[in-house]
Amino acid sequence: MKFLKIEKGSFKYINNKRIIEIIKTVFMFSCAIFLYLFGYITLKTNKNFFTVFAVLSVLPAAKSAVSMIMFLRFSSIDEEDYKKIKEASGNANTKYEYVFTTSERAFFVKAISILNNTIICLYAPKKKDFSKELKDHIVTCLEREGYKSYSVKVYISAEDYIKRLTEMNEKLSGDETDSSDNVFSLFNAVSI
Image (tube, rainbow, N blue to C red; front, side, top):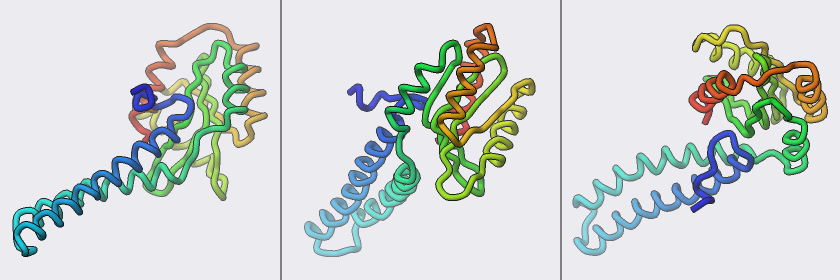
């Protein structure tokens, strides 16, 4: 059961959710097909309650399929990058694999680190770089919840991200885990 307990913000979260969503979607569509076939075979007609239940069960199955498609678009962070980031994290509170969505697009953030009101993100663009839009989205979410003193920086290169993370640990002192935990709770709420 440990497989099902990977939390949002953990390493391998995306790959885990992808597998769970595939299984859930296949199961839900299988149930809908079974209900329809059971009603048709036993009653020899489409005009029965089993057909109605089958049609109604397709709605949550379709919702699950949308979620599955969303997770199929992304894959977990490389293990090498994960180890390098974890080693460089030091005092920074670091979480992994967030997918932030807006009405226009989805942003896959491989890692987010917070230390002393400084937030850095490792963004993984698919084709075009939308890092400015991601930064604006994160700042908007933070300001909406009253977190106005945070500075946000988005990196595309893992090397640049790790370099900045190392600098943060050298130059910034203190440990504000309560504040960063609250920010990560916000990130959990606004991401899939």
